[in-house]
View 1 (cartoon, rainbow, N blue to C red):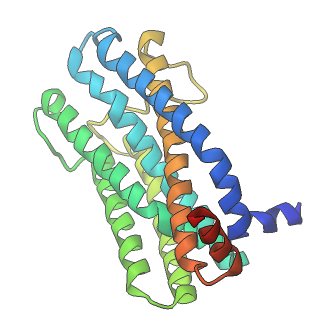
View 2: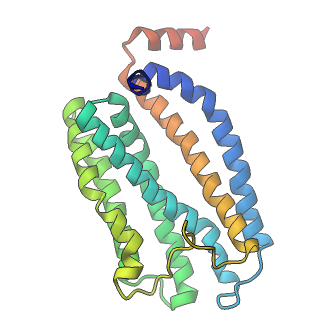
Length: 247
């Protein structure tokens, strides 16, 4: 068990595993994402209250789900950085933070587009919207802090602490619709309850969510590989890899 754990912390081992997984993550993810969004936008029935305006849910919900999930992953990686001092955990945090920021912005933007016909306004200081905006600022803070500290070890520790402090915002986002009087609708999917939507709506939504997670996996691997090459550029295995690819 500990051997596997230490292998996971090896940049060289991860680089090879990522290269094997990336094509599958990309093509299966793109296929599922295209199928889910295409089905949802073109073939899913209209909502009996919101008409066609609800269709943005097939973009908004996957982006919002993944934006929160990425931060939770970063928090786990931050804990690993502080406790076991694994460089690969810090590589993950630095690699995916910009992706998380883009996903959070996309969730906020599509939420605003959806809110205009539904609530009659682009923005309201709703509990869910405000906590998602805080999540965007947390992502920006992680990116800025990582870039501001030149020493790799000090940067890793500082970023890990910030990520762990900020993770308290995730349950606030999740339960804000239950804790406060909010305009935002409750969760679309719940593991303990049957979906309130008909299968013609929730199946393409589920495909979109799973597809985006797989595409994220590909992008995370790609960005981590790039970060590893930058950090491990002087090591023998990276020099051999570059030489092999150049020949």
